[in-house]
Length: 108
Length: 115
Image (cartoon, rainbow over all chains, first blue to last red; front, top):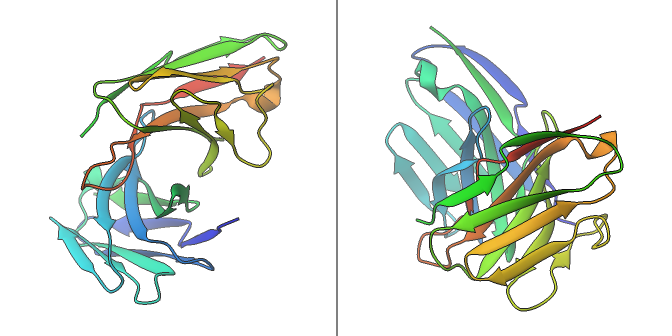
């Protein structure tokens, strides 16, 4: 089946620092998505990318859909404590598959 | 976007029993999905719940263990049958709103502990 490789697995950063995480796949996806999950909650959609090469921003978040359609990255600028959580990439081709997640810790 | 109410939010169950998880969507959606998320892990798709037909299960998941109902376009249930401690996990339902905005909406999850 489709495998998504997400890295890094975890990050410990200082408040104000920028963050970068990425996902790669051996398969092509039509849509790449980035979700955030807080403890005890379901994932919440942050950004959706529909076209190869597309670069999209949502506030301090920027994500890109790789030109090969097999990868995507998410950047968070000027991190704040509420950015803490687990970030998942997801690729959609019909149904949706998730990466293993990046656990982000932000130290004040 | 669609809002999903999922219940129960958590339960502790005896092995050998069954638990039914319910998801209610505040609008009609074509596709609903059930995922399992083991502690500290990613989400694994269990099945796609189809309205008016049998659910479509992913490899490693079977109907006898995880029967699913989808009686209408706003509601679905997942039953975890004959539970064992290995079934302890978070179970999440999600819906594809099928609109211009892609991506699924998720319920808040059911944290199941089997003892």
